[in-house]
Amino acid sequence: MNTRNQLLCAWSGFGFALLFMTGFWLIAGFVPPPSPDASATDIAALYQQHTWQIRLGQFLMMGSSGLILPFVAAISIQMRRMEGSPPILTYTQLASGAVGAVFLILPCLIWTTAAYRPERSPELIQLLNDLGWIVLLMPFTSFVVQNFAIGLAVLGDQGELQVFPRWVGFFSMWVGVMFIPGGLLTFFKHGPFAWNGLFAFWIPLLVFFCWYLVMFVFLRQGILAQARTAPAT
Amino acid sequence: MAVAEDAPPGVRPHLPGEAGIWVFILGDMLIFASLFIVFVYYRGQDVALYADAQRTLNQHYGALNTFLMLTSSWCVALALNAARAQRNYSSRRFFMLGMLCGVGFVGVKFFEYREKIRAGFTLTTNDFYMYYYMLTGLHLMHVLLGLGVLAYLRQVAHAAPLSVQNFTALESGASFWHMVDMLWIVLFALLYLLR
Image (tube, rainbow over all chains, first blue to last red; front, side):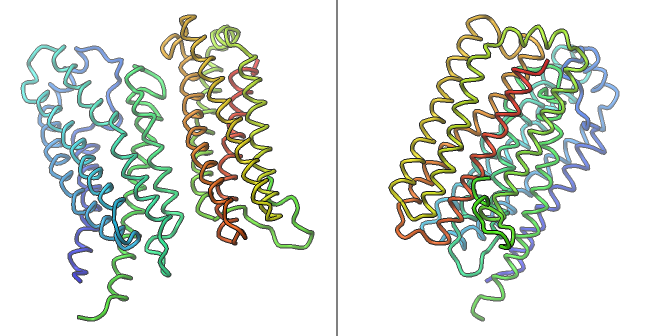
């Protein structure tokens, strides 16, 4: 039983949220997102005027995204306690959580490419800007699978002492559903379902970080409870 | 609510289902409420466009679906009553009827969407149709999820005698289905009827 390493993994989720938002919001200035309606010249100007901020912001976002992986592993360990054998939802969560991290790293690389030669043709900058936002906000699929796996594992927990409270299971599934409207951003260039709108950007962003907070709090409790109940070695 | 109505007076208020399901239900209602507010706000900016577009909807489909949704909710309430009387067979039959109404709802939606798409009204036609497809689409997703829940409840209703845990599961699932029903009533009023 290594409680310290488990807690370290739980804290890494906290580190991810902090560093990612610092890069995304404070440095790159991508919150609020540029409008999908903006002209190629406007988008190119954004990358030309804030070249180094965008480069540095993407570096931080990309770097922090790796911290998701230990966090996902820590969730898996607690899920295995809920599930018993065979830990099929645990594996599902581990796989989909890892894929989720990929879709946070990819947009950083795409935006970095745009900021790498900001003097190139505005249409190309706009293309890369579009691609980055679509890659970040459209792929809801692995998040939905991950959150339903967590939800089902929490609700299926037959143990005498629940690892996570049952409401966390329902909350997780609700969070999964909240990402789905983002998948339809492809149809819109303005309004609440476009990539800078309420339902494709603001709600998923808020819900995503609330989920991190809730998961972190109950992971920590679960790990400490596990340490108390484990036989001394 | 189907659940609290027959509680004798003096009994402390009873929350249907488990507390956790209400995190999901209230969270979902919060999101739909914000969708409704956004819709009404933008409608207020351009009432003429929304009213013109609304006239191209087929109210028969909407009304038929309202009937199906209400009937389905009623069947689920009857299934819960039957379960409370430990009449498992009757409970399962009502769940099946509720599911059939739900499947009917999905079928009607299919024909409605097909009619609209063939007439050239799509997600990108105008703002009214954007909300029409997004709201009804998100609701339809909840109906599909709810049909899965009802199928599960029908399985739960096999247990004889039904335990306290079984009732919690039945009430939780039924509460979710009633929410899906309630959201449709608001959607129907906003999209099809609001003048």
